[in-house]
Image (cartoon, rainbow, N blue to C red; front, side):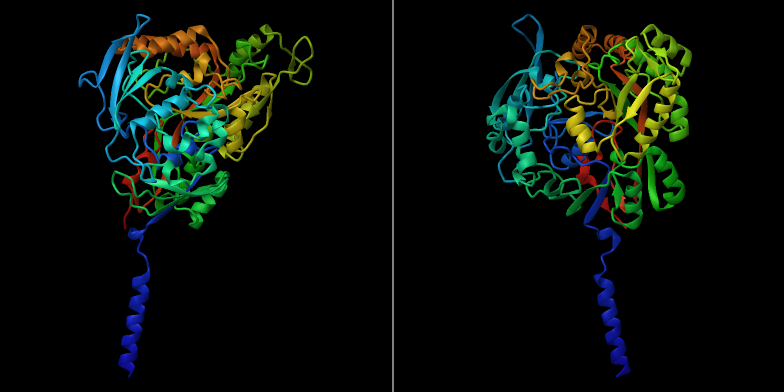
Length: 553
């Protein structure tokens, strides 16, 4: 009897043990990040949090991969002049354009079973070039003069110039069969798009995952898209949770409430360095330097900041070298323009600004700002040298930087007034509608040799008239810069282009439409069971290759 009971007990124990899911069989991953998307539309509002989520559900036509090489994603073969899929062509005005032919993957299908076709590409272009649609990259769509539909899966774009990156096409295609009705009134499109009014509609997505649940400000749930044409994704469920406070993000990771923190939207570098000392042995740790430009946009409609002497004085008043050493352990190099030394186009001869309070004072005196008895400068009308200073609330790193810069600037008689907002408001409304009124601190993430058309061209200044399209939030308008950007774009000779980039960086560092701070390194703490995540160091998020992620023992 005893032996039978013993055998029964052992069988029960075996069943219990057998029911435990081993680590290598995980089918869900919970990711934490510090921002919640202000919109889920792929082309309205440039926000990294949105890209992180959407890149699991959609793919651009082409992309720069983890090795910084341009490759096809939605297309089949990368068009080149050499393979005949891209052909220079004369323009009516005597200039030279280019006709570029792409073929969409034959099995690319929206989540509702409707094929992704050339018709969707034409519709996306139609929406993108309409200045009332609210698209961020309006200028890029305007440069496409027309699209010839060859067949359901093949189309030819006619572009108004033969650019050095003529075959790079980062468009995320929209579903014409679903979005056409929302676009009936272009001015209302940004409010009627199904990406925000019906986000879980499967027909909006053609990537490896689709969004199945959204709780605003809290989390997004993604599940495999059965119509995905590529490699079957490993995880059956991905939960992306928003935890805006970075200290709370760490607590959630340690408690097991989340498995992984998004490197590009997670720990600040100083928090990461501390966390690595305490918990590093439990994770695979990586610091990825990249093309992430932390800077301060300057509202050039503010009369105080419209004076270049004041902007240069702000630069001379900052001690960015000490800031990066003390806050970030030297992991984040000081920026002298918006071009990272990792990029081949970098020019070290552009103006550099080291802290020099005497130079800052001379510039401010010359601009009519004299020191008052309270340590704050005033102009002849008695107006204080005071401007709003905004960033994303709850981001510990940025709030520390703010405090350091506020102290630096006060030494020069400048009074910045800190006024922060949650990321979804700061990016979704304040910056997009140029309502920051003074200084706005955040980061741009770019591709290699990225031409800043949407951030510096005069035509890219957002306004109510153009549906707040464009990303030139400072309102910077300089014909010399416009001409330089145009010249860089069409220069195919690498050496000649390098010379133009030198001019560009010199002008940028002199005019200062934005105040350069530093280039960020992304800290990654991978759970040891998570494999296949490869940070790029540039614009494209790791989630662009989410189907490569797996879990192992």
